[in-house]
Image (cartoon, rainbow, N blue to C red; front, side, top):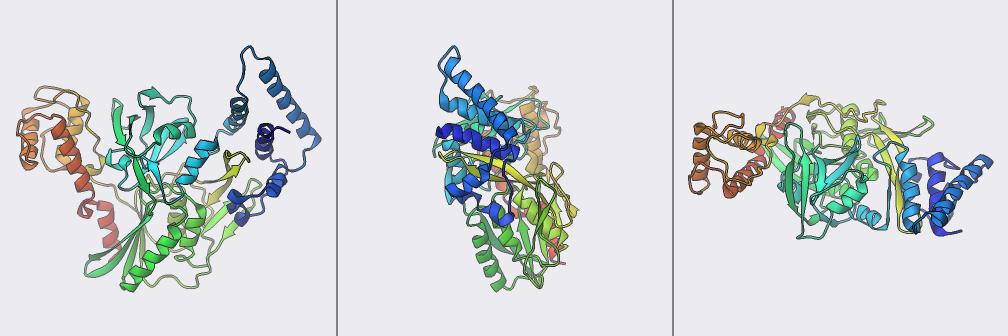
Length: 481
């Protein structure tokens, strides 16, 4: 049988459940390394009804391929059939990836890759930024969680699936991609230029912070990849050797990743009294994952979360909240409560299919709802400013949304513009002059591209200052009590 046709049959058998009896969590975690014998087991035996359905699809395939008025590309027809079946699931996380896309997907879980450094997802049919990675080109360019991508390099992405859009965003280091985005709170779309770079996948950063004379450990996890659990254990051990009196784990803007990575981390942090995660199969049966840890850590732990914390980050946060009774500080998380697994099709392509729901230790399904913080803390205005799009110099008596964005920046930086309605008043010009003098720029009171760039850079600098991070400061106070 033709290999391409086998791929179609494979997809059909997966989607309608032919012979698919999933033996548990451990089995599912090894699906990426399945051999030919295991793949044949997945396809299973076809019932008489299934054989009839296959014959119908086979007839349609042959009809189109041999008789359509124009010559049809067999590969495109095959992939179209698979994508068509997946589209009926109404699940943005179940997707078909061709060879190139599958290769790029695997690279994001390795030591480094080239791109803009942002996790994207499909939400209600729209390609949306889940989270930019820390210190990535995407973050530096001002992209934020929930930004909807409308165009890539001037071309609409309407009709593209998630991975086709992702393929257009990714690219070689040093090249530029122009994204048109829609952002809540703005009337007009923003155009953001991002210079692609090599995105290192060192996923855990640590520090020691002093608050109220107490030595507190800080561990930031930027994503969950192949080496994350190992990195976490090394950094945590180093912090404990420093005799920390408390720990803050930061999963803000962490889009998730490998479930096995968060498994290994939680086994270090929560006791065995409850499952740290429940995995629910399609038949409603639940597999419960327990830690072997007898006693909790001697020090208090707090977790920083936000609307960019998704998937594996939410598993971590939910477990620490419901098993360890540790506080979550920040704002409501993204809300992704399903588990996907890439299933190889034998030719380098794969289907990334939703196989399970995951539930918190107490059995809560957080999909599309997220996890609420114990202490809700919103960041100051500094963290909610928007990039400036300065095509013409902004000056007195003009009135537009870009001026409002500039006024928001000036106010957040401590230069009172007098108003925030988009009208370039005399007081706004005075605030601009004050900023320009501080930045060693000509004090014209007008905003040209140099002044706009300097304002954006100063905002980014201030955002990175821990003193301005209200969520972090709140966590330090709570853990240092």
